[in-house]
Length: 541
Image 1: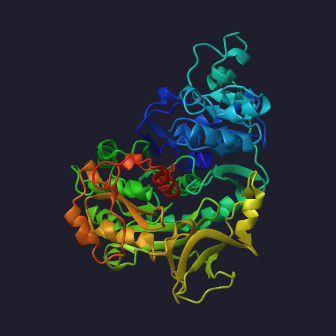
Image 2 (image 1 turned 90 degrees about the vertical axis):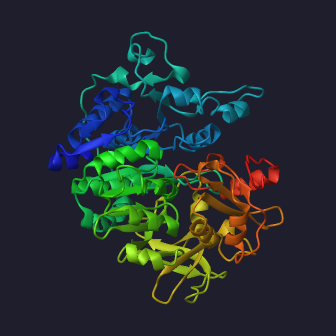
């Protein structure tokens, strides 16, 4: 992608908010051409290190844009990048590395000495009774690090002592000769990402060029109206969505602003300085960025198009974002889908439409690429307006779950993929999302709908999540901006006409268990409540 874009657009700028770990000297202002050159350089180093086509290369390091550059470099020599979120717990990362079957590992010293320190402990204990903690080396073929070396590590031929777990720095191969790109068959595995893990240990989703391409084509069509506009992105670099969006933006030659730190104090001035016409981030980050709507410098005033994926976005947030733009007719596009499917439905909000839109409507299927249906308890197509399981048929479906084929097969029936969500369709084909199947509470028709109402009625809320308590009663967990105490009177007024719920528990937003895309892990909150592990502060705490 970078090489094609460099040939077409060359000097188009790419701005970062922190230097790349693999090349800190490159600074914060790069171009398509410079990033393509860095991909060339890193792919040559990986080949010199011994990485070969079809081999799996796990990338699990501190969050930064070089995760993307490394993934492209791995892919360029025909190896298969396996992207593990920087936010994974060490034991979870260790389990995923084991499923990958002794992959190469690209990481950094901070991750090796932090979350990955005991990643191999379960395997070591199983193979050697009484063994203590073991590093990640027992799970991988070789550890490569992006850290600057003080010399060339052991295997590079100088006799220096290797780093933790025998790690070899990539700059040990800094003078490697360029290697020609290797293109795999379109239906061979070409990328591995993982599911969100909201319902347990994440699954490893195996993508190929054929299905990734089928996802990219309709997204290019959606990107046509804003072709060439500057784009500001804060997304998980370990999620397949980032690579689809990157493919669209590079295809149209958009200048890029890639943001690692979403704190409004940092992101706001960057957005105000660079005036993007396109902004995409996670729905929960958009909630955080509501405060940028009237921030100094009007950082969102130039936005023509917002993009939201991963989770449903609150109507209050849509209204504030669109109201912050000074463009004549800004819009927000919401994509509904999964890592396994890519987008299967899309919804378009305008300023006028957002005010009267049903927040549970997540859109319609993508003509020519996806179909959506609702299945009843017996697997038959449900009538319009009747709730049931949401299923999708898509040309962008992953090949399998690595090491969990049985889970993949359970979700796929006659070409229809079970999304794990409950919803219904209207007679015109509009899809409405109610809840995840595992999150259903009998006393509440839709947790998500109630949460949307509360967010709209209580401007001070940063987040509200309704989970089942010990008796399956609805328990609202709320977060207030600035961690101020929740006003009991306002809460009572806001909930007077809603289904009965327990007294709210007020938590700090940082205490909510989240995925790398800031999805809330509802099952984990329920488990925390069962254990009495309440990091609450304020009302109900």
